[in-house]
Image 1: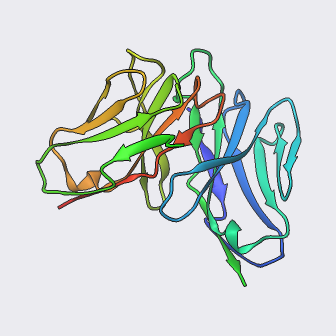
Image 2: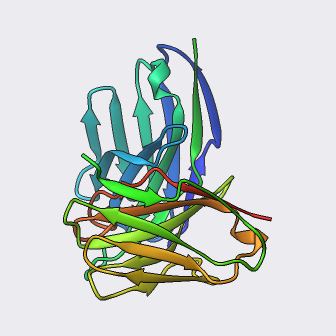
Length: 116
Length: 114
């Protein structure tokens, strides 16, 4: 099955600097790559996703890049702010027909700390 | 906007006791899921229900049972709790499948088994 590796497990950056979180996946059939943000005491929330027919997607200060050849994708956060402090999870899916969550595999998460 | 509601938020059990975690969504979603989150392990799927009337095992189903009561409700039951089931449990829902679209999560249920 799919294996998703996420690095680093903890990332500390100064407020205003950029943060990059990287994930690799093993199944070349994967074609959907969401990123979730989990604030303390809350459930994860989707912040951005990308599908395999595009290489990059941006939404204000957040961007995701995908390299299908190398089987890795990254989350980029620019001009970091205190409210960006959270745990971030990447995930990969083969998008198998019939729905269901058995095709979605999460990374182990990155704790992003924004230093004032 | 309630979204996904889980109860209870906190529970302490003794080994061998049973309990049911309740989950309800008001977004008319077809698919519902139960995940557990443990430190350093990320989110692991326990069971899911792709549509009303169907349930399937996920990555870590042992020791759990589920019931898709109707389109809105999906419960998770621990028949004989073990300390290894100490975790934070999240219910989630999606329109048609987590592998193709957004998952909406509840706020979690923290379970401690002594």
